[in-house]
Image (cartoon, rainbow, N blue to C red; front, side, top):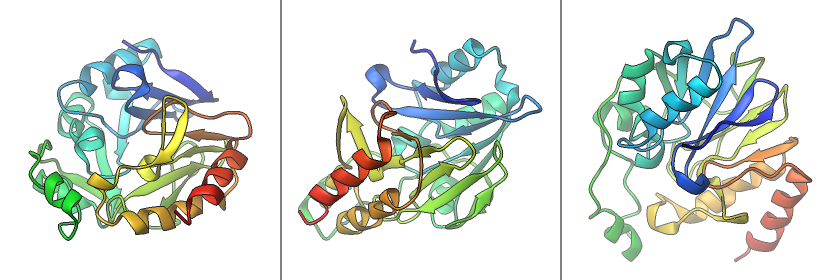
Length: 237
């Protein structure tokens, strides 16, 4: 299984699928407790998360909070099992909580042919309790300050996160970095694809040193400029 990849002091990327296809993230607190961002797919992520924590010298019980970028099955499919494993409380954006509680992902856009196809795919969530919600621009008490950037469109409650002390940005599914190539999220699974492209502009407006993707490896060198360049070249398309 893949090992945790350090992004900054006390911040790691934790691959929950082979070849960096899906990533979770771990933030360490001064008291040794952990916050996990995203919980991967149901059948694979819990074991990979447990192994990743062990590689950090940590136990599942060290995870106190589980934040979700959004409620799609590759990010929240494993959250019920990871919550049971760790005991951590699940937190989501206000507009995403009901999908986790209901155990079904937010629907794609049924007005498009791609969205109607996606609606035929089986849901892969298990119901889980959400203990708290957050909103846009809220500064969460996570490892010195984790800023919520509401970037709706992929789902209406989709969020990116900026860890202000370390300068690590978690893009969520606003942007992918498949095999080291940046791209938009797949229109097939978006609730509102044009809105997702529009709100991704926020990722070029904030300051950060590392761009960390939920799909694909991070960018360390010139991360903000590379994201801004992608947005400049592709937003009008």
